[in-house]
Each structure stands twice: as C-alpha cells, then as structure tokens.
Amino acid sequence: MSLPGNYGLRSLLLFARIALIFLSIFSASNTLSAQTNEPIDSGSYIINMGVVPQTIENGLKPYGLVYDLIHTHGIQIKWVINPTKGKDGIDFSHDGTDYRGGPFIVPALYRSAAVDATIAAWNAKGVVGAETVSEIVVPVYSNLNYFVIWTLDELNGKIAEDYFANAEIPETAYNWLDPLELSCCNDIFIMPHADPDWSSHSRLYYWNESEENGGCRGAIWAGCHAVSAMEAVFNPMDPTEQMNFLSSDPGLILWKDHKNGTLPYTYNYHSDPIMQFMGSMDDAIKGGSEQIFIPETSWRSSTSLGMIDPDHPEALGPEQIASPLAWGRGLGDEDRGYVVY
Image (cartoon, rainbow, N blue to C red; front, side):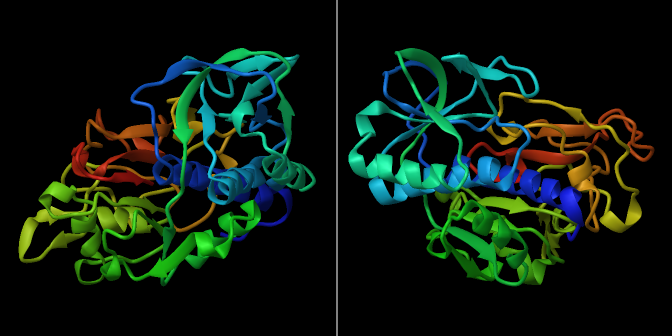
C-alpha cells in the first residue's frame, strides 16, 4: 500500500507495529504460564510504548531496541500488559508517568555498562524511556528471552521488509523462502500479499500442524486478499483438507465479492498482546485489495476478532461478523500454530 503524507506514515506505523507485536509474541520464549504481578527493582529501565503522537522513532524503534538487547546481550526483557485495561488504557504508573501500549522493562539486574550504552544509543534514535526510582509491582505478561529467525514470503515478503527496516531490526534476523520450502527450522511465515492455491501453498496446511501429527506448529501472518484466497484453498484430492484456518466451512467471502469496511470499527481484547497499539487503526486499513474479512457463515469459535465492523451491509448472518483483524490457532486446534490476519 502506498499512501501520501501523514496518512501513509500512520498506516505504516500501525500495520508495522501489529506485525512486530505478532513477531514478539511468537518469536520470543514465554517463561510465564500465566500473567503475574511482579516486583521490579529500582534502577530498572522502562521502554515507553505509549508515547503520542506515535512516530517511527517512538513506536517502531523500541522493537529494534528489544531485539538488540536480547540478541546482542542475551538478557531477559519483561513485557507488561494490564489485563483489565480498556482501549489505550494504563498498564501501570510510575514517577508521574502513565505507561500504556504494552511497555517493556529491562530489569536492573541486567543494567551493565554495555547494556546501558545500547539503551543510550537507541535513546539517541528516538526511543523514549525512563529509569525506575523505586521498586514497583507491575502485571508482567511475558518474559522475553530470545528471538528466532523470521521467514518472509519469497515472492511478496518485500512488502513487510519496511517493518524491519523502520524498527532497525537487521537483515540477519529474517530470511526468505517459498512456502513449499518451509520446514521445522522456520517458526513464523510472513505473507503480506499472495494469490495462494493448493499447488503453491499447500505446505502451510501441514506446516501449521502440530509436531505430534507431523507438522511444525508454524505460525502464519497473512494480509490483503491472501487471507480470503487462502481460506478457500483445499486439497483437490481430499477436500476435507482446507486452509480455512480461522473461519468455519466454507471459508471467507472472496475479496472480489464484498465491499470495503464501514467506519468506525469497534475494538476488542484491549489487554491481548496483539492489541498493544495506540489509537485508531481505522484509516490505516483504507487500502489494498482486501481491507476487511467476512466469513461465509461464521468465524471459528476459537478465533479472536480484535476489530469488528458491526455495520457492514454484507455481514448479515448472526455470526457473520466482518473484521479487519483476526487471530487464533489454526483450524481451532490448540496444538496447531497461531494464525493472524
């Protein structure tokens, strides 16, 4: 999508931030079995993710800092999300500042001279943060310990490469593959645009499967009309094998057969990690060949809809909810990998 001026910048920021949030969730190990309130020592460093207005410097580069700290220094980063907050709500407050948008914290334990030098270098690039002046207790969603290498679609992944470039995540953090080449050495496949069919993309069906059933539990991020096209793809030799990962049979209404969304959208799941972005994403979705996704019948019961269009004229059935942002386990199977549209 190519948009002029501030509109294009906001679109890039919001789409990129959601993509990077998705990567943070599924790339770094989560050492918590459930969200916990944890004491944070004085002298820890808070990366402020809720600065407004959002810019590339304060909204995307923090992910580059987190990657740098984990990859270069091998330290643990705490991701803090208030489980009861509303849209753009406060995650915690400290020393006169309300922190929002899912802030990250570098524990004081890891504040070596080298780590502080890295933080200072990213501060000079526009990352905003502050040191804790006393012990605080915060709701930690996840302890981030390492990042895997991400895989971009060889044909169309270039569209998403700007996300990494603006966050200053290095090219060594990701690779490029055709979907048929995916193996269990790959963890996340990024497909911002595609025209999938069974001959070219069938590997995604099996790669997303659990390891116990011969798959790799791979995670998939798809965008544009690759979404409705993929959900309709099935094995011509066995039609029960269909890639309707997030919707019920027969899948989604194809992109060419429905209208765009009707604004404003309604936002849900404010404490979900995927929803840790500030402000509205309504305008950022006004582009591309498919701006909203509508099931033929319904979404799977396990699918979460982060944004919905309650007024879409073609979402007429009681469970036929139009949404531009959806996620869940593939085919509603808890043993499969995550899928995000």
